[in-house]
Length: 104
Image (cartoon, rainbow, N blue to C red):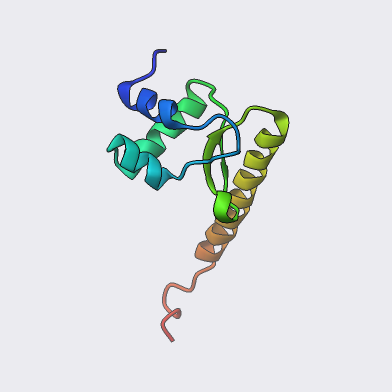
């Protein structure tokens, strides 16, 4: 399946390697795309095209990049696993929410 124009734009700006990750906001500025379009393109690049795009969510070097070795891939996987853990905790809290008593 060929890349869409939006996927191509996003792929062309993503850095190879963890040295200089780029934030979604900066991708939006550089490409004139919306956050929604950038996120959809990243999802498609990973899911449909197999591009190893990962994110570093720690400190000053946070952002997206294309993993070039196993260590970089592991950084991204750890970041995603942490996000999943946080999201699962939020789901549990919502499932247990007191719909009538939370305002007391």
